[in-house]
Image 1 (tube, rainbow, N blue to C red):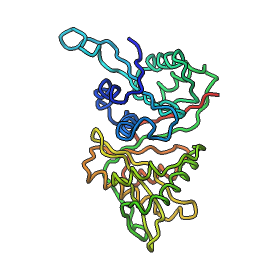
Image 2 (image 1 turned 45 degrees about the horizontal axis):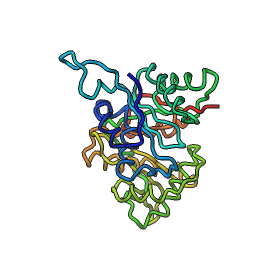
Image 3 (image 1 turned 180 degrees about the vertical axis):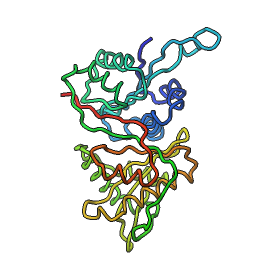
Image 4 (image 1 turned 90 degrees about the vertical axis):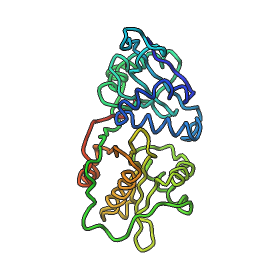
Length: 292
């Protein structure tokens, strides 16, 4: 079998939903990105080119020994919102290598690739050769166990953001992107407005002034992912980030999330330790790779 590529998110979700929901934790980014495109269009992330999707059917037979009507079991999937690199879902290394060949044959240029370690390295080796890529970031996926808010809590309280908070939250979202090395400076107004409309963006407020922000994805396949968490540099080290992360995590649980997830940069031991104190436990490591 081979990779199937499409710009039609509905076609992708019809084909790949069973694969994505079998492992909603490993596929968390694919689920949230494709759902955002589904709800808000192929340019939802400000991308000039439409979002791109793909899946691999392995051709395995079903229980009665015959291939199913869709041609087999979906064993891998990816999403991409150009010019950002593709996000790879869980897949075997040979599938990742085959995907690199398929995208190259389709004339698609890439600046890098993102996903779980082993198969993402395999993709990069196939695309650029063993010496043709570098690690841009190492991330760890965490899952919430028992939520343990910090005690004592910092001064202030959490509240849901409203439409009046869009300018501030959009500026903070751009600052967060810069902090993690995203130099695009894309307008975040639409992104923030959607999160606020979904009731998924929280602020920690002290003396009537917002001092920290955290958001989560809408509930999907039983999971919700916290991202981003941001405190302006002059206000860090006061417990605000932990407090607002606990608040948005509680909101996800109250919304019915069976699994609350977040990614943390392994280069930032302070944030990793904070999330573990709140009750998050490490699950798996991911990488962002750049092609030289």
